[in-house]
Image (cartoon, rainbow, N blue to C red):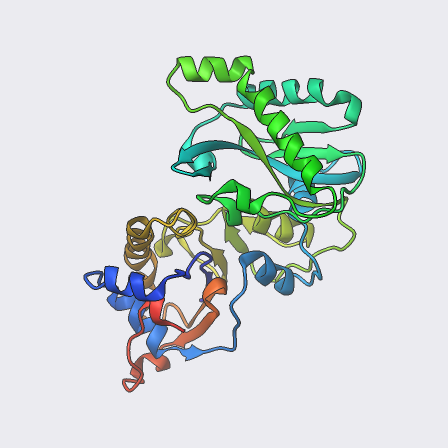
Length: 333
């Protein structure tokens, strides 16, 4: 069996800090695989850029791609992702939190979108909640703005990641208006009364024309992932997408597995959560993968870490290269 593991969110910005914090964290199998394997040519890049290259796309507009997965029969035009978010005051900052930090029912999402559609009907805006956590906004035309992805904005001051471009100030005002509308929504009144966090705004990002002009080219192997963007790329490219397994022992055939285990700790700057996620990967993936390489059950393990600019291939023969020292994940560059 040959397996390609893709680990986004694997780079920690303050490498010296995390190395000091992680001194007591033991990842023997992970470090051995990273150190003994044959390093491949790679450059540090976001997951979106990495995916665009591997699926043959010059540009990766997330909203049209995931909309094609969620609502393939929707009206053509310019679409944005408009995902629901909670805003938390933190001293002089306003932090963006996503749906990992709150639950939201489909009926609540539909109710909030209905209020926004009533407010912006005359502007030609249309909000739709494809799922409780994945919302979309259709605009009458391309506003010509650049958008920060939700990954770039999570856990950070929203003011640093607002839309940029000629019409930016207009959109800053629109977002304030949207916040006021959602603040007064009956759905949020009920949530606050029940002790749940209010859904205070949307985060616009990933804009582009639907349907997508370019078709992605999917790999021949089965791709297993829980990331909607990955699944959209695979299915639109004619490939086979399946949910990510919980552990290595649940993989029974060749393929690609994209794991988002490190996402929350990385994006929210939570070093403890990020290191705990590495410990989980060690126990559930790398230790059993190492054992499978030794027995020959696994003939090749490829590992890609896009943001860290690291890729490695490991075979049973690699494990005999004792002169190659183990390498911790935060020391791969």
